[in-house]
Image (cartoon, rainbow, N blue to C red; front, side, top):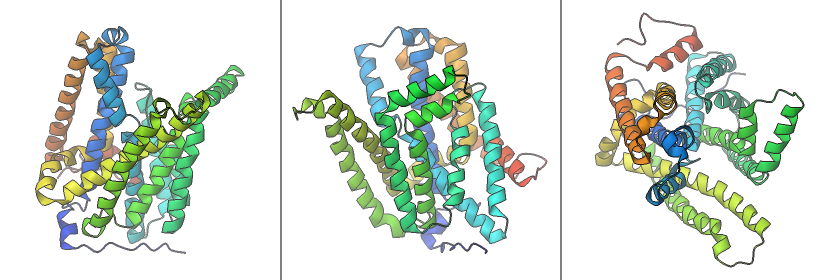
Length: 380
């Protein structure tokens, strides 16, 4: 039976939120913002574990900066990226339905190409996430026709499935180690993503992104404005409550060591999702205001080249930290170089998209997906 998908009505505001290519600009802005968080936290981790200055330890002031960045960024921005992947899935699904294309075969082939890109990427950057996205992306195929209620229930169930993984992190990691000692080929990436709960969180955010796409939440901001305001308020309060919960050992609640560990694991997972939802809803609200939206539009070109930018960041880490030892700049200097690189990415994306329709990696992925190549990468 042919799948029918409702097409969002383009109001005047929707037209303003879409560029000439039919893209929803707020999605590109959010993706560009997520790339900043991913770049920063990976830069901190690479400095600490791959440079001479980082291995020597941090001063008290730099330790405070590191802790603050981890609190605000770590494990939050990959959630945003995952949510946007799910939203993009709906867009592809909708486009295939309009063109009467065989969607399942098309998307499976697209995921296999992404898996290949991820495998290539992992040769020079071990923290590749593309392979995980390619594998977990199959979840979306099976739930593409779920109704809204079923999608939300599935999203919640998948997310809460991540909490036991975090609680029993050490046990899961030890079990995988034992399997490897028995010469059973278990991918290290599977061990990490399962023990950290990321496998379930990623799946959950894919489903939530699909739900947002089906309900036109990002395509029709005027209709979603009231909902977004409530989400900002609720997620903001949740951040405060979970922060208090994580510090429960200082409140003399009489919890045992095991009880504190259990509550911290639960509150940490909830805090991550609260932060991510807060960032997305707040940035979307700000963008819906014309003046603020214009000031945030500088993130859009980089968001349009999200895959290219992600690969570029990995090259930056490999060269700057692995090959050049962070130029022995110290923590503050490394962060300044990281910000400068991010600005350079934005300028590069702006320049590239003045001449080409797609980023180089996006063009390759798109061309292989549809088995169509052009003279140059989307030359205008």
